Every structure is written in structure tokens, then in C-alpha cells.
Length: 127
Image (tube, rainbow, N blue to C red; front, side):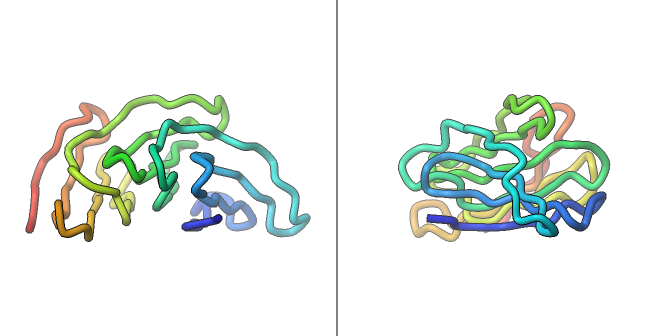
């Protein structure tokens, strides 16, 4: 089951979808064709949220295992992992190319976190 979608701000005809099957699919919305399938070890419940970086070919994937995977959309490989949530990451969004915001609305976590993409460190946490 598809859980989330996001458009590429650099290429408005490109869409990423995240699914229960622990994949991110890249779609061309003009042709309807799936251009690639990227796998992430997202845990049971899969990819909960996706967001494209505004600058490069990186997709942030908020996952059921409480982690955020930064995936190189061209190479199909996980570049880094942001870990800190204790429950599924239900929303992830790039603020700019260097900063990601994530949240978990689960009763076991219920936090919003701000991350430095380059270092993989958490800058701030809100409850």
C-alpha cells in the first residue's frame, strides 16, 4: 500500500511514493512509468513519508522503524541515516538542502525534530 507521495521541486513531472513494502518508487507523472525502485530497511509498516531535497537528488524517507534514511535517488543507495525517534516517522520535510524536519505522532514518541543533513546530528527537539 502506498503511504505517501512528494513531488521533486527541481523536476515537477517527477513524483516519489513510499510504501508498506519498504520501497520508494520514482514516477514520471507524464508517462505514468515507474523510473526506479529504491529499497530501504524501513521496518514493518514501511516508508511513512518522503521528501525531495531542493538542491540535489536526495530523498528523505521517514520510516516505520523510527529512522530517516537519506537516499541518493540516482544511485539508489542510502547515503546516511538519522536516528532518534522511538516510533514511526510520519512526516519528513526538507527545510532547505541542509536541514530536515521530522515528526512522529505516535503516543510513544510524539516529537518533532530538526536535523543537520551534513553531520546527521539532531539540532532541536520539540514535544
